Structure formats: C-alpha cells, structure tokens
Length: 220
Image 1 (cartoon, rainbow, N blue to C red):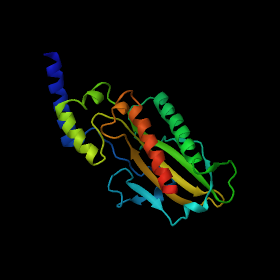
Image 2: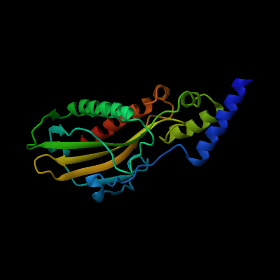
Image 3: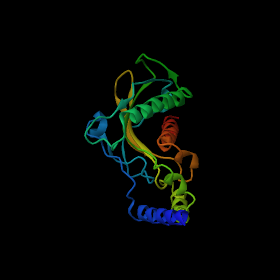
Image 4: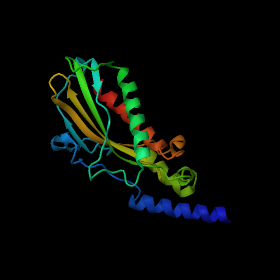
C-alpha cells in the first residue's frame, strides 16, 4: 500500500513537471562574462542547449595548439547555482577542467605559450542543478515518468528530476587575443541515462562529458 501511494505521488509530481517545466532553468547572457556583450540569441540551435552565441568565420584547421585558462567559477549575482554548496561547485569545476583538457588533447598539443596557431580557451562554470535523490531514478520506471521521459528522449530534452550544468566558453586567438567564438550552454544527460541519475552530481558530470564532445565537434 505504501509503495502504491508513493508511486501515485510520483506520477502526480511528474505530470506537474511535464505540464509546467518547473524543474528546469535556462541559461542567461551572464553580466560578468566579458564576452556577453557580443553574444546574441542563437536561433539556429533548435535544441535550446546553446541559447546565446557569438561566432566569426574561423578556419579551425589552422590551429594545432591550445592553452586552457584556469577554470572560473562564476560569482556574479545572476549565477544559477541555487543553493549548491561551494564544495559541490569545486568538485564540478575540477571535473570540468580535467574533462576538457583530456578532450582537447585528442586534437591539439597542450602549450602554455600564447604563440601562433594556438587557441586560448576560457571556461566559466555558471550554474548547475543536482539530481533529486531516489526519485530521479524511480521516475524512469513509474508509468507517468516513462511516458514523459520517452517524449523527452525522442527530442533530446531533459529527463525528470535530473540535474544539469550550465557554463560559458570563450575561444580566443592566443597570439592576438581576438575573440573567435563564445557561447553559453546548458548540458544534461539523455533522458534515459539511468547511470546519470545515481549520485547528486552524476547528471551534471555527464552533461560536461557531452559538452566537451560538442566543443570538439565545433573545433574539428
């Protein structure tokens, strides 16, 4: 009986989330990011993962080296961390730095000097949402959750009661300091990535993996 009541309650909660989108947050053009003045709504991004972008014509193949600035945890008043602890922010930042470094090394030589044929990349962690313990996983098996998450999976949308990560990327020509590209993005795991529902930061770290892959796709 208790389990039945709990599942009915979960179904009601999921229907609320489906109807109102109340569990999601959307990135903003962060006021304390230097490149925000250059960004504009990215109407070509149907997924909503990259709502703001600045881009120029760049031959990325002309670059074979990269230097990555120390990652910045955003402290502006328009951050989107909610009540996330400083410890969790630091954990995500460390994972993000390592994740992106490893991905970039598959294509670029990592250097410290800002010389020719070199990109300089600055990452700014601006927000994150943690998983909802237990319910995030159960929502993949509840009837109402299965329907909603099925729809979300088909359109690459967010799953129910699952976390996400938001960050900014700024790419410069290292020798001239010219801004080549900048964007803010929200990343999250697939709606049926069960592994990403286990652990408070699992969805955010899975989102960072996807984001690093997306950056590499842009630079190739």
